[in-house]
Length: 109
Image 1 (cartoon, rainbow, N blue to C red):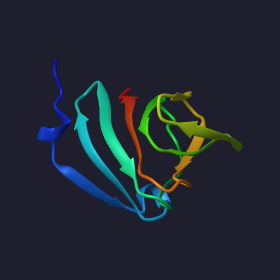
Image 2: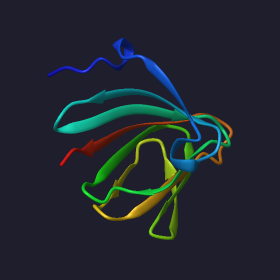
Image 3: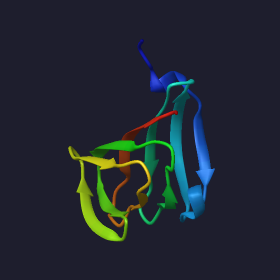
């Protein structure tokens, strides 16, 4: 199945999960997965949260920032992939000067 994110509406999700500013995202969701193309402007973040029933895989396509997983801070950059295991708490912060863009997959269970 092909997913064209350009054909999905762009959502502006203010203070997503308690984060700063907004997450801009095109989201595809069915009974099996949530797949999104997201972007955080400089200074924006996704608030600390936990996927208690599934994992999350994030592939960064541009920019850089900080991912904090279970209290451990790691830099993230374009071309890298971050895997959050089921039950881990995590947050994503754009501390750079350009947009931090990514694709994320969250299996629905």
